[in-house]
Image: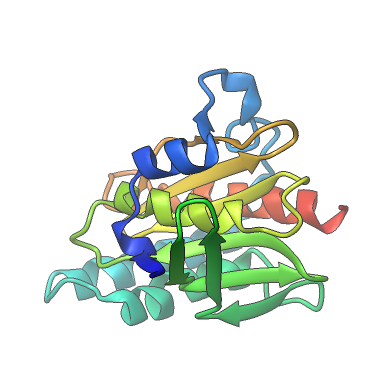
Length: 210
């Protein structure tokens, strides 16, 4: 009998054991979130300030659920990052399945937001309720990256719960390995959406030339 494992129940330990996934400690593995970032214009900063204000105003009333996070935070961020251009095709709630033949397990789940370009996975975004730790979505994101049919190329992802943003780099050049950025927090005094947008722009430019 095939055992189905919801992706929400996956742990990093599961992925390490089932797929030989490794966390990279070398800072040079994932420099894209720290180096050579594009400058954000004053007009873009004004838009990001508005996104932050909207988030703070709404979150004072109640925790933001996934749909509201997408509408208030993610959608305008992706627009500013030019991910709605003809170079990218956005598909939502894309289903991913993976069958582990040796163990008779079917791991199945849904991606909250998947950005595709010419059938290549270029950005994977997991939206979680704002009161849930953003890193709790990391195993799910890595599982989806492991299922990327074009995994010979580096893949970048973004996990967010609306308040925090963490970028992830996945590579399978020799064996599956990954690293992640610091957590950018929308509630800090400085608007950390500035570097978030800058990183998104850089990743978009890297992906568009592949």
